Amino acid sequence: MKLVRHIANLGYGSRKQVQWMFREGRITDADGEVLYADDKVPHEVIRIDGEALDPEQGLLLILHKPAGYTCSTKDTGRLVYDLLPPRFRLRDPVLSTVGRLDRDTSGLLLFTDDGQLLHRIIAPKSNLPKTYEATLAQPLRGDEGALFASGTLMLESETTPLKPASLEAIDDTHARLTITEGRYHQVRRMFAAVGNHVEALHRSRIGGLSLDGLPEGEWRIADAGDVARLFSGD
Ligand code: URA
Image (cartoon, rainbow, N blue to C red):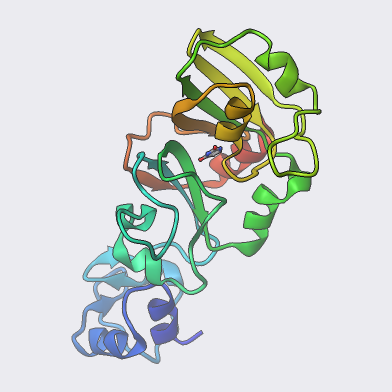
């Protein structure tokens, strides 16, 4: 792929703007030698203003989403994309969220521009466990765990029961719930189905991948180890 298109696709600017960056000598190789738009060099050696480029296509990002941010590219109010460098929103192929978290849910949120990886994570048959920590308005009754694990719980206006989910009571009003599906507002609706209300919700884990100390509002690029953990379930 031509260098201008390659750099523009990473969101650094329109093709016209990238042409100008070449003209201004801002695009160099790793030794600071100015590159020209028709040069053929590998991605790894390219620098813009001395900085290495963002990773090529095949990117997976881990964000610690704060509550109050919407998983959308265009909505009023705070968007999860506002927490990433602006150019990440301009990448082609697009960097999309892997599933969604409600605006008021915090925790582990993934982004990728890799359609196959996205599918592998969210496809129902991959059964990837997702763990949520819920703060409840009412104390647990004690029978929720058995009901959630039964595989018979039917949510309002749905036609198939939920797959078995596992509930761990942390204390009276705090529970850890692991589900393998991603139905609309699933966790909140599960607790509503047992007469409770979720006051705060946080996703702590997908597969074997957790935030692992990543501060709220911060993100990092996942590496091969993260991807392995994601599918390892441990
Ligand atoms: N279940 C919910 O109710 N909300 C989320 O954000 C994720 C799962």
